[in-house]
Length: 220
Image (cartoon, rainbow, N blue to C red):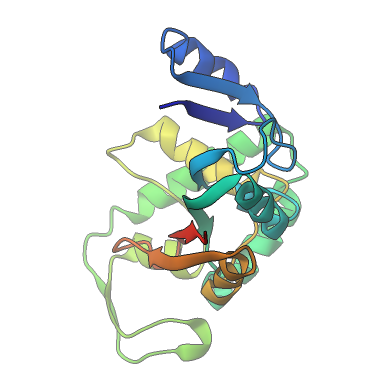
């Protein structure tokens, strides 16, 4: 089985260095809009967190599907639309951070990480007594840091992942020029318009406000 890995960035050099001794691995630096392969070439295509960082996610998905064999499987992960105030905050903050230099945004991401870390020191849950539908807040008990993170402001921190990875995850959110959010209905339409059936959405517990994995099979 041939495994092809594609990315637009210089990360392909790291990938090549780590897989150069694997005869069945092919690494290419290429745009998702101009893939260097024949149409209907792949049996399986998987794109994890890529197309929402392009200027036209629907077109990116369409181009991937054109390279998928009839009967082949395709799977993607995309960001979903956030709760009302979180969506507003993301848009307002990203207007500033996308114009920063890489180094400036890394500094900002480090401070945001520290905010998340500080919030995690509050161990007692907060309780929301009633649903607030306009803000997409449901009644129940919440960890304070996760409640702020999900509904108001991305301030990622995960002790197990460590300080550096936590900073990079914030950086990946705030610095890319493109970072679109999508509803299930929109993504389902992408699949249907490209003759992809057996559509399945998977959203792990705790990812309700993050994104979803979607898969399907190209009709024969």
